[in-house]
Image 1 (cartoon, rainbow, N blue to C red):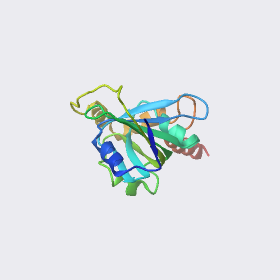
Image 2 (cartoon, rainbow, N blue to C red):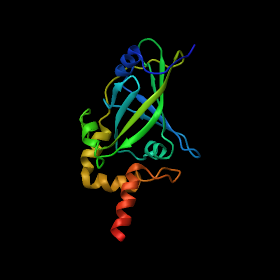
Image 3 (cartoon, rainbow, N blue to C red):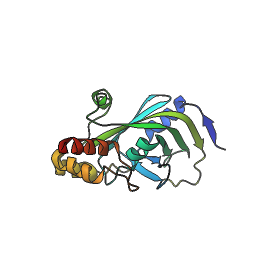
Image 4 (tube, rainbow, N blue to C red):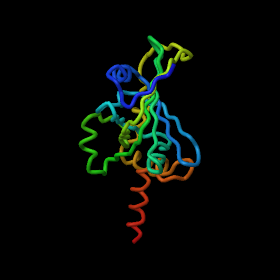
Length: 191
């Protein structure tokens, strides 16, 4: 039987910290729902109602666009080893990019990984747990380094252009936080 909580309990935080993988879900008011798997040591818990993760450059940027539009975000953690459990965090998120004044404060909590493009911060208003009996058992082997190697190989200049080309709009045409910066710069350059 599932249980609901207003905030993370210490045992929830312990469970989250042990996970090697988590999922982030977001959706626009109309359009496509997005679910993204996240690895690396990228998630931090700041309080029973506040989390953030370091988001790396990828082929899309749906979460950012959805947070710009409505702020809704859900995190899911599942036990692939040990006792079964699924834990979800429901919240309201926002995006912090390197050009924002608060970036230096927030990035100090993370290892700055190659390709870091933004931090997703969420205020949690509900936590739920469920059995997870149907989740298969998997053993963790290691992190993939493909994404980090790709970012190192591209370098900052190429990554900047890649983000501008691939991370400015969602698949539904919504502008991301990075996109707002790129479009604002383009319009001020043409004035």
